[in-house]
Length: 171
Picture 1 (cartoon, rainbow, N blue to C red):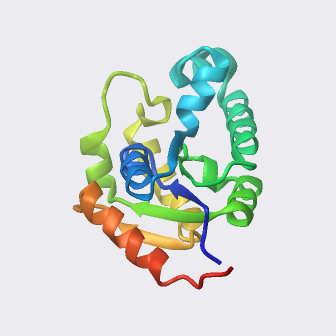
Picture 2 (picture 1 turned 45 degrees about the vertical axis):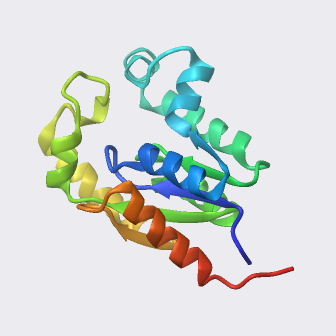
Picture 3 (picture 1 turned 90 degrees about the vertical axis):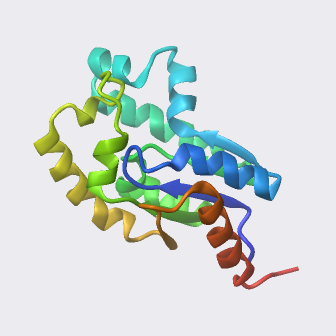
């Protein structure tokens, strides 16, 4: 069956938001970023949510955002870095659409991460490395893996288009 929803998964700063907009434009779909949706619904930045209410509250808000998106179609969803790691979230995504892992090396991630505190889990570099390694086993369960270390959005859009073209179509 041809998918009608794509979920971009991967570590923080992998380029999920950028690719979501490029893919949505190419497919003539809509793009949504779960982090932006959570910030909008909570009226606070992710860093503020973490600082004020903790990671558990952020994860709960993230799940709610994911559930809100379930009925929508023709959508490219940029997920937060930890969203696909949760087994319940992963099951919902896998039932609802196609998970695409943007696989980016830790070295490249560190180069991309802003040092302004917007990424609460990136403050401790040793912890960041452990988190990166721990999350890879979940990301590997995605339907499609894109080596996104050196590829730009246009090349990645082309790869997704090719992959989608190889999927069986139903009427």
